[in-house]
Length: 444
Ligand code: IMP
Image (tube, rainbow, N blue to C red; front, side, top):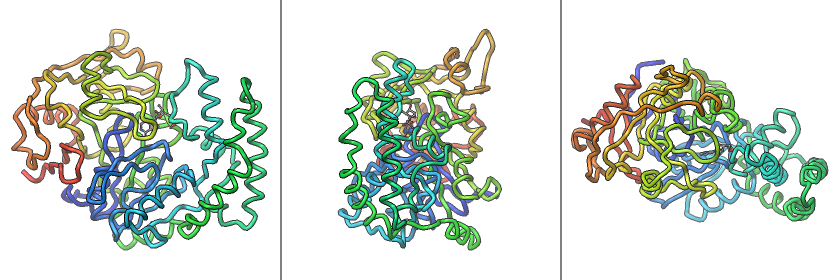
């Protein structure tokens, strides 16, 4: 990687990823950094994500639209590796337009090669989860698993098909297969999904979406290469988190895409040598939504407090998030597998009134000590016993403080302790939800 530019702007190609199980506050970091981005590329996941952004236009929860959309000079790209729900995307575009934000082929490209989530994927997601009973993954129910399964099977519809004059025929063929599949899966009551899979409704909805989306459908690759050749600034916007990576996460309690650098490379054809910064967004404590192991989870009152103060409810499903202490072995693992070379530490202000604060320094598994997870596989992680270091809290409001040196000493110590333990600089600290509630460490 090249010599790094100051962190309050981006230069060259940078990506923003989450080092945990998602929900770290990436939306805000991307929003802040996209001010200097020529291109913002959303590269993984789909409408399972929920990125919250608070800025001068209001508060937004995006599932699909790249956060770069607020910068009029930025081109936002939805890459081929993103699962597109055409109805969700259309709704987001219409909402933004209603608030005066221009969205046109000039500033949004939807890859024609991306795959379309259709109502049958949503039905199959729900039915599979019900069938798994107490072994369910706890998915967001947005059709992600079935969509990516279809992609791997090389069936289904892609965004470019929306431009095909025979689109209705393609759709009706898929619908026919899926109606039969859903009936086979729904052993309880095969008519439950009749409304969701009604031919008339699906056609009416998709025709309305086609009108909105068609102008923005294109192949983004030449635009990406052109930006790279001109030395422009490209920002990769990850969704979910490293610990939810299909292969390297807490399998099987993972999502079906690649939330790290690998996912960005698959989406853009750009590689580690092309990238200046991989910004790992890390929440000052741990959260997880859905099933699967979480060694530092707090089950009692303290967990409730973190949830309440941190507003820890899923942006997509509204489910309460599980909360716990920061998990350094998992963070070190994510940094390593994600190629992370700088950290943005978020929601530090949520810990303002919590004292003492624990931090998981290592795990013990079968009498052995692990500083770094050797694998995030659910079997290993479920057996992990967290060992904590206790630090005093700061019992002061830090929201909006602009300089690191102005933070209470115990807050500084908490940040420095993490930094020392992971050996990667924490260059950004977010201490409030708004765009300007941020500390750049180079702003001493
Ligand atoms: P799916 O991606 O909907 O299939 O869900 C698989 C797992 O990933 C579940 O545990 C979800 O709660 C989790 N997940 C998916 N997307 C997000 C996200 O954006 N934030 C946090 N967790 C997510």
